[in-house]
Length: 77
Length: 377
Image (tube, rainbow over all chains, first blue to last red; front, top):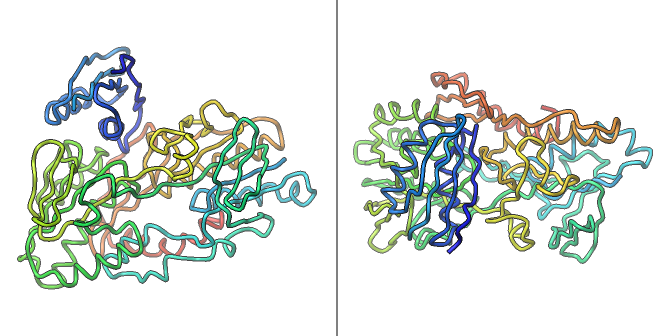
């Protein structure tokens, strides 16, 4: 299991958008891999946890720093 | 100065043609050599596949000879790259030739990988190939009623294609007089009907008006083609009578095989369009990993930035531009109306209401594209 997060820089992107970027990267990841999504879209703070919950992955942390959301997600299955 | 362009799709062709004109003097004087390596002698207009799937274009209209599109000063070889040796500024091709370069542009595009979803190839119609688009048209003509389900895998090129296809399905079955016998169901990976917020805000009420049902947070896990059920990663499923799928995509096989980027997407600076760690390697179009739409328009605008910078570097020693994320996508909203999405990294304006004028402009652009790839439009 990798302890280092892989960063997905989705700041200032509209298409495909932060959540899509995260889902696409998670698809190819191994169970246990952790991603840190960077997003300037405030919607990410709700969208990402909603998908994580439904897809049964793990939301590690979510915080806004200097206008940027840093959302860490671990692939659980 | 040896400039090598790998890939003869939209981005590579526009770039070669514009660069050939900008550096005409240098090429004539023998100071610059511009070479394109492509896997095919044909150039395909990929957006036309949607029209083939709905019987509005025939496949012959999708292709032109690549050589016929290129400025004569471009040395063109149908000889795909099999090995990249970036440390030595070299590539090796299928024929065994080695090409050295001073500047490399990788424009190798993307490919569909439906095999990554179990049962997808067996169970779904997919209009992302000529064969698939022709077959889908036949299936649509034969369809007598039931549930038509659309599912979307990511990543994929042409982000608005799923939305366009739904509106075209609505009008197609209306024209056949059986729309009341057809249930249209749309399934999308994120929690709105499209990843781009302005498209989602526009499309949702349009779906409601057209009686198109939708389910969000649906990421395709597998398809049971025998029982005609598609299952999502999120634990839901849908029965279908006809399944249309936007397949997952990957970067070009040669990118994967040469470990240039995870999943076939090359790590690229989103502004400079240089490959991370290689200042003399540019990457444009679908091949990049930058978070912009995988569309011809992005490839076009990226190519123009790289052309300006390569030409400027040669003439003055400095780069002059950065890519601002500009994308322009037409969105067909049915048989006779369309809108468009024009945005960049910073600006995302609301969509204009669909109109006949924009639809006919798109239809015209289906032909004007051949002027675009010549680097003239």
